[in-house]
Image 1: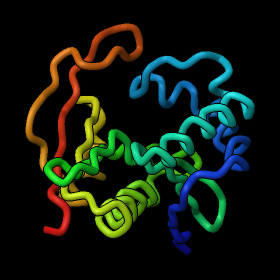
Image 2: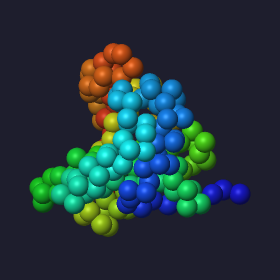
Image 3: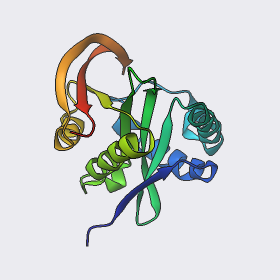
Length: 175
């Protein structure tokens, strides 16, 4: 039986499960994400991070969500860099799913739900994303959610010891 996927705003109590996933999946995520300090992988470090995310949410610059499968936290989906001005109205989507819940469709469903939040709650017009050129699973998630690639950001992110190119993605919301 396929488990259900939901998203909701992150809460302070999510620190421990997020830290557990991130510590266990350290090697799996290393090629795709910037290096983090050791406390990032602790409940205390995640609690501080969640406080910063919720402050950004209060300021209107980020919508930090968690991904749930059968009411268990299995990842995150975040709309960051929100520009709500009438002439911009865009945000950037980022996401990860814990290794124990990957390849079950959760990432695709979570991104779809985040796009609904962007449209219905945040009133945004445009969704953006970026992937590592080699991250084909993430690119499939974006394609399935109506994103199109539109360019390469050369040497744009320092990952796993070197500068990497990023593939840029876009989707006009409401289309």
